[in-house]
Length: 424
Image (cartoon, rainbow, N blue to C red; front, side, top):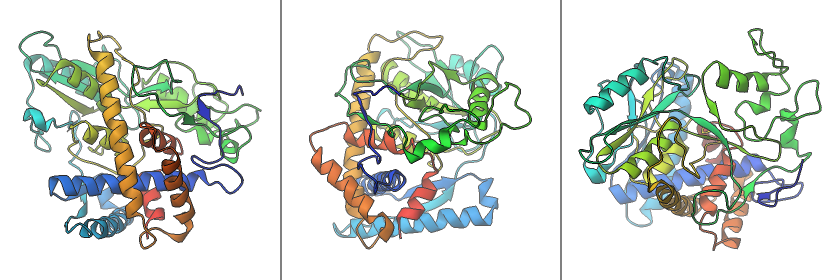
């Protein structure tokens, strides 16, 4: 592997050496960010915050109990923090709206008086938007969109009456590579990303079965490289990790913009995030959505990483879940498959990313305050202290909060599990 100067090659995300524990550091980062976000939301809006589960999972008593138990611990920690300022607030567990083909998650741009569609009802769209929505929800063969696990297609309805009045879509999850500084849209110079060093324990699960090669960092399913491919392996992959990747592209239609090496970090930008950049670039008459397509994922809620981005930019989602945001990332440069770049698009990406960086850092700092010894498990206290010390040591880095979240979600795990293990 060729060393890359723009990457942090340390054993842990914020520490180095034999005692570093990147899994616990990832758990602390995501738990702190979630708690900080919850406390900030409740204090600002004076409303409770709800985290939802898939209605199909609600029929499973164990899954329902796990969500309620974890959210109860979140509620206790956030309530104790808010009480210091004389504030009240609650964090609730709930159920996301029901799935149906064409159902939507919306980024509700409240400043422009947008209203979310009622659950189980079609959104009210422009005539051209309605036509495109129909094609997306029915998976029209003349549109390329991802239909596999986590298949939600980004879409922008455009109700403007002057200038560009066309809707935008489909914008499915796209796999990219984390860019080095200097090749992305002009923005705050991003803090270096983290990549486990050569020979690290985290690479063991990414070694291809029967070979001396490794699956690149960040790829979804990459830790299954030591497992056999399944019998329906039509692409001839020698292991399950490569089979998963090939099927995402060839069977389910995900766009891969390039092939990462083991010196790169693979990233995935979801459809809603792409839609928000476009809606913002086009103007306040535009509304960003994600449309449910395919049958492999049915929860109508935004993942935690998308939720952070959406709230930071004033487009809160209609529902939030605590599943996985595996190797999630924003855009760093315009991406317009089959479409045109708006004249202001580079500036929009710069400004929205900077606003997201700012909120991530604020939420992390609040969350680390909430994670006092009364609310964090003893086994995670050293990692909490390490994350707090790292933030303090790099206090002048404006992008650090967002970068740490991006690094944490390359250690793939449902946020519900991470938060449950971290809180007591």
